[in-house]
Structure formats: C-alpha cells, structure tokens
Image (cartoon, rainbow, N blue to C red):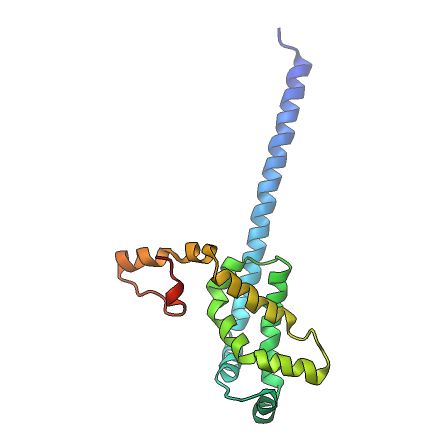
Length: 181
C-alpha cells in the first residue's frame, strides 16, 4: 500500500519548494516596495517648496559660461541642484531604482537641468580639480536619454494615443515626436 515515510518525504519536499517560491515572491515584492518608497521620498524632497524654488532659480538662469554663471549667481544654488540629481543618479547607477519610474517622475526635469547645468558641472570639475564631480548626475542624464530613445520608452508611453482617443486628453508636449504611433 502506501508507505508513510515516502508520503512524508514527498510532503516535506513539496513544503520546502512552496516555501522557497513564497520567499522568492515575497523578496521581489519587498524590493519593489523599497524602490517605490525611495523614489517617492526623493520626489517629496524635490517637490518641496524650497527645492522647487531652487530648481526654478537655477533652471531660469541665463549665462554664457561657467565663469559667467559663477559671477552672476555664485555656486551655492548650482551645487545644491547638482547634489539633488547626483543622489538620484547614484541610486539609478546602483540599480536601486527603476528607470521607468524615474522617467515618469523626473524625465523632463533631468534633461532640462543637465542641459542647463552641464557647463557649470564641467567648469566646477576644472576649477575644483574634482574630475568626478557630478558624475552620477551626468550618468542619470545620459541613461535617461538612452531610455527615452528606446523602443521600451515608446512601449511604456504608447497608452497616450489610446487616452487621447478615448478621453480626449491632450498628448504630453515634452517629447511629442517620440510618442509611439
């Protein structure tokens, strides 16, 4: 008939396999939750009144060169703004946050701020003899650009065509040429 020890062995083996599968699924969920929590805390910091005013001041500055920027505005605001994106870039580089979520929350802001502050970062690197200053900010910018030019980006944003037809919502105007057809 049935051997009790064989049945016990099968039940124990199945229990271990189910336990391992459950643990793996739970760890994946915890990782996703941690990533989301990190991004939302960063977003709260970036969208604070103080950070918004800082990024607006830096983003609306007009200058011809690093020296011109330093003379007109000083470097404090630029250093703070660079620091914000430096931290985000470091987390992205270490794969602690998802680029798709980053794009949804910070996409256009990263490009705008790097294109404004890139010459300032390069000038600060030379002036301070710190060749790696702002490297994670620069990494963030280029990684976001590569993602923005990818088919994955088009797939992630193809829903706008559907929303536009179904709800009459306007298409986002930041990258109108990149919205998937």
